[in-house]
Length: 105
Image (cartoon, rainbow, N blue to C red; front, side, top):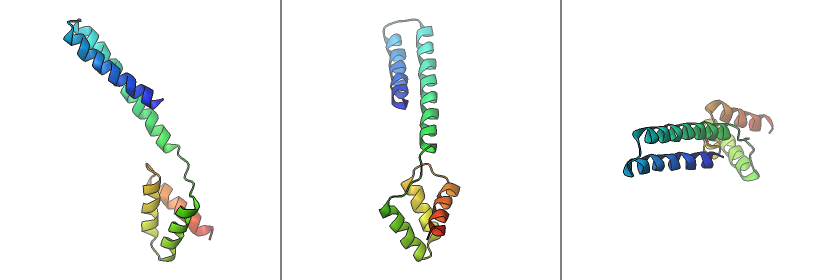
């Protein structure tokens, strides 16, 4: 859905430029730019919700890597690794994942 909204935003931007090139009233370009901005904002909000809703499930390889880091006493590095694997994850969420893994061992 967000890609459709981004495509609409691009289309309305091009429509605004085209309307000025072909001599349409300035109001047409302004309306197109407002619609483009609206589609862009809605697309960005939707993208933010998609990133936040990602479930943090570790596969076997990731679990083994985190266990290795925890065995070496590198808790901070393990938290950073979780944040790399799951884009948009906050520090607190990553710590919760590492703590859950440490408690389960």
